[in-house]
Length: 116
Image (cartoon, rainbow, N blue to C red; front, top):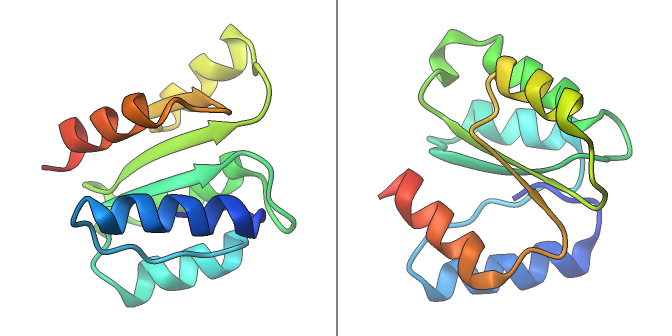
């Protein structure tokens, strides 16, 4: 879970832990990349706007490392990014894109389908 908004990280961490998932959180792109390197990560829920990198840049770095080819990446954005930007993210390897606020049921269903 990567978001610079600590309230969102805390909320989603509790939500996913209550569902039985182990959650590793980060508040910026560099921290995210370090935690992926240090841990066996299956899914990254990635905010589009981070203080150090864009979510798209973090996605490129995740996909640039061959050992991460099975890691699922869900991009969260606070605004409608448009079809062209969405298609670009898909071509760069994002597995899903959702606009905040994301309905909790929809988010849980996506994660359940992609991870388990």
